[in-house]
View (cartoon, rainbow, N blue to C red):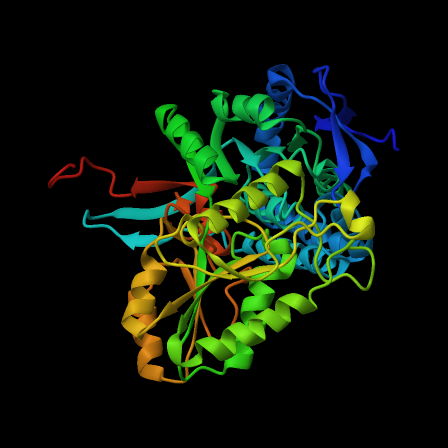
Length: 493
């Protein structure tokens, strides 16, 4: 039992929320362990955070962009130095194994470092004007106060890749992190503050999405919302933001396929599918949840994939022997097991797993057996996001059928193909309906300098990461300077 309190950070001070119902922060590997309590924030707390951002905006906007970038650069270095500390907290709160947690922190540091460099590339353009004696150019300016709403599955990296471009572009920030991972969000904000972010420029409100998150979206002085989370909530935020005239960016769900053709290196494909499907307990938006396998290699793939599933060791992520952690909380655990029952009711053939992992100490946590099952493409479990360690295998007869099955879902985040035929590779690139795609490599991952996001119901609004992230947090301004000294003629638009 711990009495640690996770507070808000508003205008340079750590303060409790004004609500009366703090949220217990439980270790999902052992629900008997209370890590602490997340403060309960109300609309009043969000209003205070936004007001702090408004007051700090003018000075932060006037801070030269390279100076803002140096602060982010220093934050990146601090994240590297604090990898062990933040990684251990991340494992305790979210559940992923320590190696994955530390890897997330290092990825977040790389992202922040890259955006720090973009502070020296907030370029516009000089453009020839059709009007004589006129100098035309474009420049960028920040939006103002922006709201960031981040999820629990990557509680360090996703806040980092939203905060850094927002700050580099000259905005002030109010972030609402996930209530399941308040300590990690606190450590992320503290690292930016320790790197030199001034009071009021970066504010954090802990608490529930239904109260704190909803007020952040609705607040009239918040000019943009960047959200990562469920499709249902994202679509509501986008609709509300549009009605209020806000700029909105949403990264939502996925149902990511790996296509394995008859000429594939099956061993490589299995390793990729197992890493993408069972790594991070399947709790990645880029997780591999469908293996679409041509019948010529189906038996070999299923046999080797079953061996990979049996080799997974569920447990506490701080135990070096553990290779897969728990679901993050009881709600997510319940969703996974609801889908396991749906699949069985639909006739899915369970090859491995399919139940709770509850032997010994596992019974005190939220563990699911790594599950491999054979499904029909029409089943709900083959089309809907589960967000757990569940791999659905869909047999197909041809590449054309594989593409058809891969595209026959509402989502389009990422995908992968395993084949040795370069002609097939380029047909796949042309025809697959995903925003990111991989050839002979797993569906997971993304690099700081490249855009991240998907199509269809996966993504709404501009992409994250890469230069597109900076663009989201900027407003373009076009400037005409007439140096001729007289009234210009010609067409006036």
